[in-house]
Amino acid sequence: MTADATFEDGAAKPLRLVAMDDEDLQVLSALCQDAVFPASEMQWQRSKQRFGILLNRFRWEDIPVAQRRDRKPERVQSVLAVENVVRVASQGVTPGDADTILSVLSVTYEEDAAGGGAVLLMLAGDGAIRLQVEDLEVALRDVTKPYAAVSGKVPDHPA
Image (tube, rainbow, N blue to C red; front, side, top):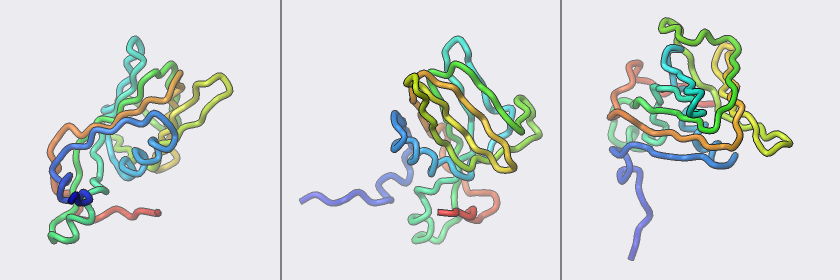
């Protein structure tokens, strides 16, 4: 007999997810919500058509485990990488500014008539990053071990 996976099964393992369509991207967006990062931690590699951000991601997937084990909520450093990027535009964001901390509200995709589209990163405070892409391919990969969230609190989640 087999059993369903539990949150404990994946609690200590890093996430490695790829979104290839809008439905997949909704999952990544939910996991990236309330992630924070300094503006200096994003980079566009034009020759490789790759845009990446090193995020301090809140571990939404860990909340049920944390509540049962009476421990502080956690964050983890993760790389959000968008492939096939041909153009980057931003509003309310000063790239390279290590003193400006940005917070992710959502990651969405707008398809265009030519088969490509744009990945939109909506940020708190009316900031936004628009990544024009030829095809949708977004990866989220945890790159450090989880650590206790400094605030010790769960961010407000409007879901």
